[in-house]
Image (cartoon, rainbow, N blue to C red; front, side, top):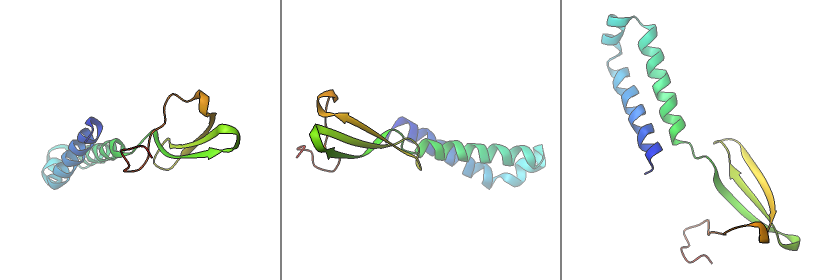
Length: 100
């Protein structure tokens, strides 16, 4: 698990604990401040779980070109087309550790 995902898990756990104690927090601070903090903590935690800049596919094109598709955000993808000579390394995308 990466450091960002651990931070996200901690933020989601903190927001869950805050939601469980919402009645007490609302009586002390009013209903708006605790609920806003809980919602912001949950959104931050979920944003840390999103995969960014992860290559989703590499497809060969004619004349030695590659079409690389990667995730910019969880819902947006970008495509890059480059020549094989311009790439520094190629990796296997699946569970194949041999690079076949």
